[in-house]
Length: 120
Ligand SMILES: [Zn+2]
Image (cartoon, rainbow, N blue to C red; front, side, top):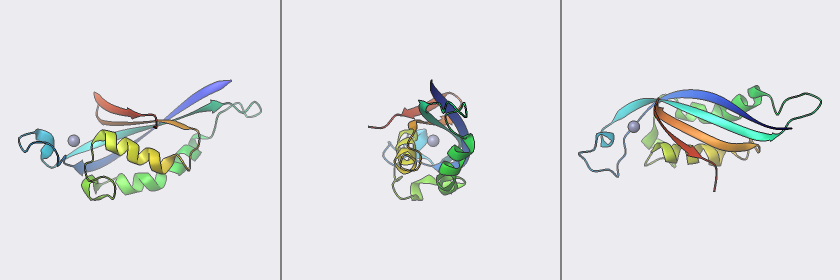
């Protein structure tokens, strides 16, 4: 039985997008309550009846969450231009080795705008 699990996290952070024109609002320093959705997929364990423990997703993401929460994203190595797209890729690269069932990372900077990365 194939299954997909989604676990949502939130972090608060500031950023600006330095490559945009100075007149663009995202060029100014501002903050978001970012929401991250970590998605794993695979075959359910027939004995346990689940794909994996949600707590293991939380444990795998914890050190990355700590690097992001209440930070100025532009200062984080690899996030000089911290668009939601770049944050999703940044998370993917660091999380995939620890969470092999990872299939998707979603980063939402507002309730209505999100970037989805599935690797590649
Ligand atoms: Zn922003």
